[in-house]
Length: 297
Image (cartoon, rainbow, N blue to C red):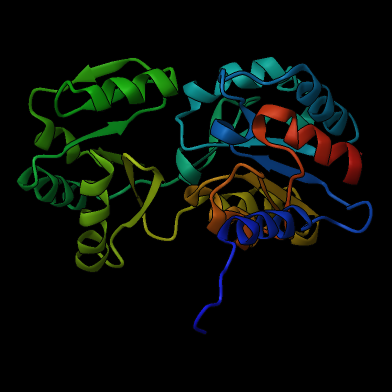
């Protein structure tokens, strides 16, 4: 309407308030809690706060399975399992790695579930990335293997805590098949590339953006949500008793598929919208501990 003035800052504050009001009305009956790492369980210093450690140990002591569920490989998750000091417990023995491609039992040191992309599909995707001047890397349980040495591959190594190795004949190396490929580039290049990939490789691979500069390539029908429900079924836990915390697009499946999906208040707007609940506090303010103390413990 002519002359109508809209205070957009007020609208943003209202939207933020409504998102923060997505809270349970009482205690939740939970037997499994899945937790993303970066920007969720970890604060900006990439550590887990003492209060959050205490809350998760209390949950594990109450027979609630506490499961770190990350895009990182197994070796990149282990330091945080040690920080929680729950691996020796029955309720702390499982981790989910590589965005759901691997469900790993720390007691038997064996995977319960392990998926990987066909090597020929990986090679084809890599060729498309090469045409655009983009680099890529794949993962074992303990190492990042890169096509070239770039600032992006070093950033991935720094974030994940895994050593980086540049492979001379990367195309031949890909033919073995791997659980995850990461294509890293400036955000605009990623945004331009992903629609093409989703169309060309529909049914052969899944694609999503974990950070603006990281495009993740996964086996089809493989995600954190599928892995969490797979583990819950193995443990005899009903979907109604599952909970997940996350902040980013690679967390969306587990926030939607578990009964109690909880987005961090610092999470992406679309993730806060998709979740059943939103924490009152951010990852830098003990958001997980605050939620668990109020609604689970």
